[in-house]
Image (cartoon, rainbow, N blue to C red; front, side):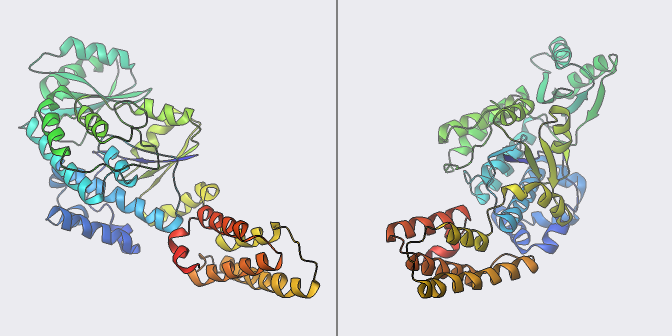
Length: 411
């Protein structure tokens, strides 16, 4: 089983997506779509802007969503794989909801832009910060946070990322005190490139305002389970539930390790990180050795991706058609009819299949329709009942994920 994972804030950098849009038109279209939906030139900021401006929460969030969506669309167009699970870290949860069709790309952009503005407003003057803490038990970090926190200057764990890493989030003053305590225990401390204290009580007001804003949007059903940051389990396909959990995500910790343990328990063996850098891929190695993860951001990542996902690709249409022809039981013993209606059409499609493989490409619609004609000839010659013929062709379209391409051409 395979899952797609989407990174959160902190992974942004100037130039992200450059190579992708140079090679794939669908990626370029995604960037242009983001500009139009937001009403400003986000793509220029991503590709050649100022890092400090890009890192501002209201810019970083739609930028990372745009890159993850562009990568997802490239993969779907190139490989047409349906992952078994979708999950994202913090902001990445919105990328997962977008990939799963729960939110449209335009709506998701507007939501995360608003989310970023609300987060930024909640903790002004740069007083909200986050720091990754490694090489120390989470229980010790929780203990230090409780020791330091006050109603006015809260600090708490904002992310449970893995067995060896949590992230503390809160008021700058209290975060510094926790850092001082933990440094004595030889903890490894890494301040994050974010401009507010996400997943902490300081986001309470922002969370309430986000909830109101979310009621303006439609939440559709997803065919793929999408994991919630708050629960570490799949979302229930209910608009109110989505809104409730997305509100809670603002003030409660990201249960990333719990989420990974869940998909591991369900049988996921491979994950692909869709978006900037490879933060989640690196985290995966600390959580479990049973799930292999690779990042996909640039065109050169395709070869690694191909090596992983071969087993998840839909079967080649022509090869599957040939296999159905061979497996179909024959009830016609007239050799002349069999030669003309089965052998000759089969050989033609076999040659097409060999040409497609030699040229290392996908079959064209015309070639796939030729395979359908071959099957119809084989079915007729072998005296297959019409109902069974229709069932076999419908199953072929479903298994190879070509219904959208061929359904209108088949009478």
